[in-house]
Image (tube, rainbow, N blue to C red):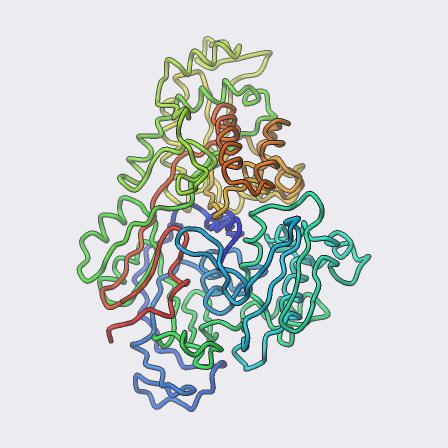
Length: 586
């Protein structure tokens, strides 16, 4: 399913990013031996006839064979198994297996019908969807346009606290519904049982809007609520119309899904009998593959993991070009970092090539632009890679008026060039990167302090602070996951209201009217050639000003056991997209 923005990889808000916010590198935990895969008993879902202790369980029209269940190694599930609030990438995988969105995308990043066809009005503001015939939820209840309307109204509920408010924020009537002066969003119009239209407000048309219709549709009869807490109580008890039915979740142990044998499109019923998510620390995944406890996983692309998985027999380690990166963001509102020449100097004095080699080896590359290299809008021509050059860095510091003091620290207007970098230890790469800076930045007159704190605290003081007034940082580092469309609004590079307002993702404080205008023009244009030109100009401006820096990009590793057949994974298609075609040698 399409996950717009997928904010921040591996942050508790996820990404993924997720993310989504998601840490762009796998989280590291205390080493633990792999937990043997449980033989779980079925719970709710398809009708269960019982279990006799053997490998099979009679369920619906086909017997469940425990050896025909795909075993996915995961590092954490948060229990937010709901399309409106899931923010952890692993929770989102669960959602993708249980729910279905109106649209999806193919391997080329093109949006295509999923459970509905659509038409776009001549003014590009109204999307009219017609549900395919015969869609039912896993309990047999038919899906209607009212279920679709219910789902999208949840995103604008006054008590909604998830990360996907952007999905409906530009709909006509959103603000009136959000503030309680209207009972529904006027831009959502149920036409008949299978037809629904969504109308965007004037000035908000964008080709990126179609991505908002990839989120799973919820059954209103199951999720309807008066109090938000009643809705939230079902986050860990999901029900949708998709290929799989929720059975059981044991936090920090496993989550089990069985195949939906009553799936509304019989020809697409999965060939496997279910999926089980096994909670296994990243550093223990290699051992889990060696002992045949896991079929598929997405370990961090560390050098240790690359070496470990290269020695395991019976698996295929797939390397997929990623659509995410590591970034660092400067607080441009403080005297030390307000001049773009200082920010450039810090980049020249940071050996990012050495970082990539140390952190990712052949799977990494130095970042150049806010636009992902996998995007049609990416153009590296003319981009400054800021190759390591201490002489150039010192020259820029002098040009910016920062004079070297007798103690080796530069000063200007009574301010010392002292910078504190917030670093979290849950992943290795922030420590590697900041460690390189600790060696080289003092050579250009910077007094660098590296402040270690857990990931959530870094987020609370920077990116995920609930208001701008609560932000308390000079620079920090995290990971970011891009959407299919190159639209930058709302994210760490955005200069729109959502990105800059309280709780927005752009904490840098940097402002530029020309950049903001070009960003909005690029978002709203339906002419791809024009959009490409605008994104090239935007990238060049950011590459010069560097309030936020794409530090490095990395490919992702997907070890897959040899017993798994037909598992399709690519940059824009995760392992859940075509899982109905997967086979298991059992």
